[in-house]
Length: 217
Image: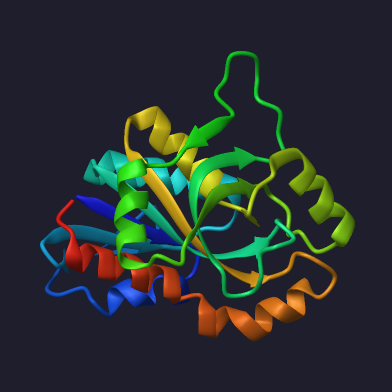
């Protein structure tokens, strides 16, 4: 079983288009899910979360219900690395919460699934492999962007991936996030997001769908 999640439906539509046959529609903690087949893989698609609390809550509920082997999170992100530009696609190999300090002995950096990363690179060799930082803040200033990048050296920033990565780590589930840059995390962030989100957001889930068509996981 493979789970594919996103914040908004637009970010997961690339996989919905390839889901055939559909086996089940339902709800999990008031979020819609669809279970079906892509290639030879059984997959559950779920969307509807904002921030780290909802991301962690939904991830745990999904794991409890479906007991997946793999968990993939897709969607949009803001650039942190000054070299990243709008349209770049990043696959996380390390996940960091940039807005908290871990308690003593707690694991604050989570590594992504090497297997999922390799399969994604096999179908999309332009993907950038690197760190994804998450926090409950919408980054929209050069100073804030620079501070987070200095500490994390992350390629992109979002509000969800690292929380899901931690839940998956604690449950022994392979995790990977695939994110596309839709804004620069600077003063024009909100304008850039509005301009780029709808046209770019579906691409990561379409790449995942292609990977699932090609590979049996």
